[in-house]
Amino acid sequence: MSQNTANPAPVRPVDEVYTEFVRAGSGRQSEEWVRLIREMAAHGPIADLGRNRFAVIGFDEVDEALKNPEILMIDFEHQQRFLEDVPDSVSVRAFADTMLMQNPPNHTRMRKVFRRAFTPRRLNLLRDSIEAIVDRALDALPEKTGPDGTVDLVDNFTYRIPIQVISDLIGIPEADRPRVEADAELFIKATELGDGDDGERRRLADEGTERLQEYFRGFIATRRAEPAEDLASEAIANSDAMEDPLTENEMTSNFLLLYFAGFFTTVHLIGNGIVHGDRERHWMPLVASGGTVADGYVGETLRAWPSILFTARRVADPVELGGTTLPADSDLVVMTSVANRDPAVYPDPDLFDPYRDHGRVLTFGGGAHFCIGAALAKMEARVALSKLWERHPDMRLSGEPELAQVPGVIGYNRLPARL
Ligand code: HEM
Image 1 (cartoon, protein in one colour):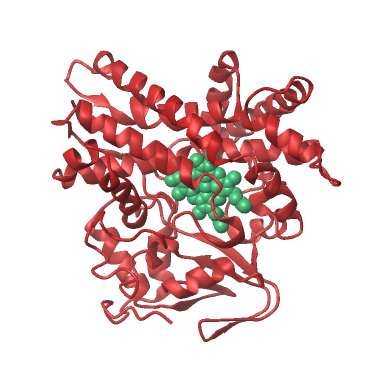
Image 2: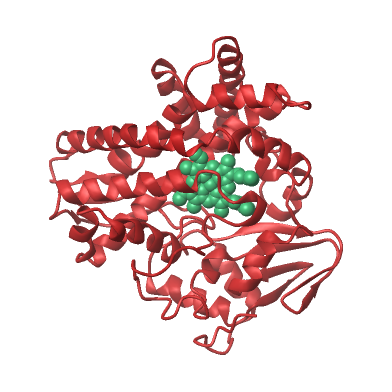
């Protein structure tokens, strides 16, 4: 069991700390957020949140919770219980049939269709296209600069990269991209806690999701009839070659998953890298020069300022985890971001140190559901940050960044900068 020796004795009840931790706005890169991590960790390695819900906090326990086959992914049936206040809707249901919400054997069956299509060769081919996408976004930055001399690096840079990369990867034709992106944006907006009308946002997200489902159904049919050199064609061929191929709905849902899973998470990874670099500016030229320090910088951004703060699991029958018996039918909040700062594994955890070993960072999860796009996301962030700081070595963030306002996320919706 890992010992969180640097943690203070708990002062506030764990459910109070947890609520604050999950609340939107807690995900700013700040001293306050780091203090919340410490407060949460002081209740570790496993804390009872009440009502059959437990927070898994220590590194070893989080790692095991992700890898233990007796600890289950929350499927659609149990998701509504876990999310509590998120109403059922088309956009919530759209993910019911994805690999992310399955357990074996269905998970194994779906994942292998896509896992096999994510070959190192395909990723290498994408490298050139990522460089071109980043270069184009950088070329356009000066003309996007407003009269006040600032340019928003989210709208014009971090947001532009993953969406184009994922479209390239899947093979979405250029002509279809504007409508696919517009509908995807409606979905993303619905995940945010805003001041506006939630009902209206959800209605728009549902409409956008239905159009995306319709689009992907047509796209899959086209690619099945006329395969191309893309991941979609390969995944369809993989599925069609199996004894129990994916249904049309499973295929469509998993394309939607790929599209979204690789989108906002990577936007925020790049954004978080920019925000940290603005505070510790000595890293900027080192990252710009490329090499292993650039990889380390991305790894450390993932560890210290992860775009996803936790994930969830479920226990059907009693399971022993880190010396605690988790009772039947309980839910787990698996706090990967707290574990990433467990001093037993990462000495001096609040020091941002790109030279650490990042092999065990938990931001991409672990075990059977380990992120399929981890290598791709890291490649995108490395290229984006190196090229940004190579082209604009004196760049500075200017004005107030705007938070993403998505519970359980560290990220920014606006990053005004002077180039
Ligand atoms: C910084 C960027 C990213 C982060 C932080 C991230 C994080 C994660 C995490 C934590 C999981 C596992 C969830 C769990 O076990 O509960 C996951 C799964 C997944 N991710 Fe990512 N991801 C990122 C980028 C991407 C990209 C670029 C893609 C695709 C191109 C992608 C596709 C997926 C898919 C398909 C799964 C489901 C795997 C499964 O259930 O077997 N992700 N991701």
